[in-house]
Amino acid sequence: MKAHGIVHKYGDNVDTDVIIPARYLNTADHKELASHCMEDIDKDFVKTVKEGDIMVANMNFGCGSSREHAPIAIKASGISCVIASTFARIFYRNSINIGLAILECKEAAEDIEKGDEVEVDFDTGVITNITKNHTYQAQPFPEFIKEIISKGGLLNSLKK
Amino acid sequence: MGMTMSQKILAKHAGLEKVVAGQLIRAKLDMVLGNDITSPVAINEFNKAGFDGIFDKDKISLVMDHFTPNKDIKAATQCKQCRDFAGKYDITNYFDVGDMGIEHALLPEKGLIGPGELCIGADSHTCTYGALGAFSTGVGSTDMAAGMATGEAWFKVPSAIKFNLTGKLSKYVTGKDVILHIIGMIGVDGALYRSMEFTGEGLSSLNMDDRLCIANMAIEAGAKNGIFEVDDITLEYCKGRVNRPFDIFKADDDAEYDEVIDIDLSTIKQTVSFPHLPENTKTIDEITEDVKIDQVVIGSCTNGRMSDMRIAAEILKDKHIAKGVRCIVIPGTQKVYLDCVKEGLAEIFINAGCVFSTPTCGPCLGGHMGILAAGERAVSTTNRNFVGRMGHIDSEVYLASPAVAAASAVAGKIAGIK
Image (cartoon, rainbow over all chains, first blue to last red; front, side, top):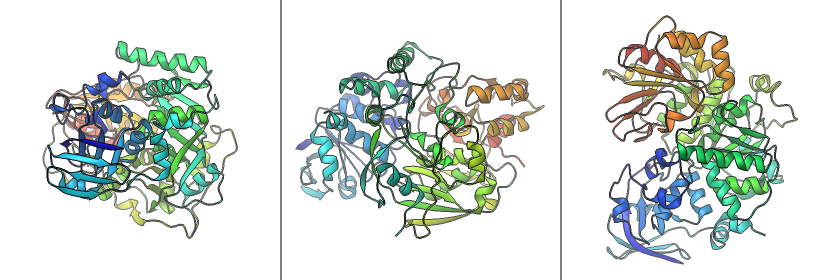
């Protein structure tokens, strides 16, 4: 399993209130949520994002509210993978549970810049920055989590 | 090596003698919680996965608190979906407008969480119940759906930071000042993935409302859970509320902690978090400039309990809020609301020029009932001051205790109280 796309880059402590502001939480519609994704910190995101693009940020990405609407909005906007130095734990859990690929890699998060073309190999954890010709090693998923993702999310993994 | 309080609760619910930090476990749940924003997503997932039953109708709580009383048609539709689901599965603890409260004020008040229990909630402030000596943590809607169906959840066993509390709080210094002080010290990711365990002789000066407030904001330091050692104050609170047997877990003497932080409560001062992160704290005497304000909010799952209402009323009694300031007081539950009426606090708030509202999360997350315009500033007893949290992205939220918030409402600028 691989992801390949252009990078949208953010800083530290990107919270779920800016990923999807609470004023839009009166709906659970994935497309509608995606249409407001990142609106409060990056007005251009929804205009420029393309299917398969990759989101990269620094420390504590997804902190704050437990709203699953945040990873849903990111996934439904077309993002194929999020890479950050660290993730807030509820966001990390939610992403796995809904099948949004997510990798912790400080080296990649610090070196990759906006607009870089990046490829991610989830089986090995190798992240390749094609623009800069750099590679970085992330921890591949532990078995337990691989099983949830390979079955298409937590609920599918629980189906009898 | 021994176990922490959190690890012992997880081990018991996983049916294991022992767990260690980093271990992945499946554990049985005593309570699964959702609200009017997170439950609809969970219900959709529950239905999509083809589940046709819930694990226990008494161990699920659905609380309509965020956008209620319904702020618009979409919010009304989401509540209706929850109401229909609760009706279909005969969920005992469904709380609608009229008997609801803000979820994390309501569940402890109703005795729905007890010491040693394991709870997940599709709301990040579910960590509040650690005040009762429970392991309680926020999750997303998919975990909630799986929890409702199976009564279980997966966990990675956390390591922990121990907070050893000594001394006594000064007058007008509360649990809110303690937790803002701690977040200022360790940062918004200072406890990332870990437990924050509170113990020490200083516990005796913290009432349940202080503890609920401190545990509530553990998530603001990135923690998986905050938990207090059970003592006489906890047991007194549980009396008449938690009418079932419960277990009390103490950390082993040789439990392994990543860090031990000593806090002398007598040294803590009134504290304010400046925009746009809870870690941007200043003590009241460090604020030298005038920070003029447009709005004050007193309430929320952090500070909407009776002692919060009482301290705010004590400061607002026979005073009037400053010209040009709006002050919105929101009791956390119907019971707190009624007690405010009975004790004459409602009258004090109204005479001081405040709005006195039915319980709702409303303004805390910029939902309704007190949204800020561009350029406006609020002092709020809520828990987050992120960009755009209470309204326009160019508005500002300053987090503080009910005492500081009430004093600021009177002064028209950020102010402490002596």
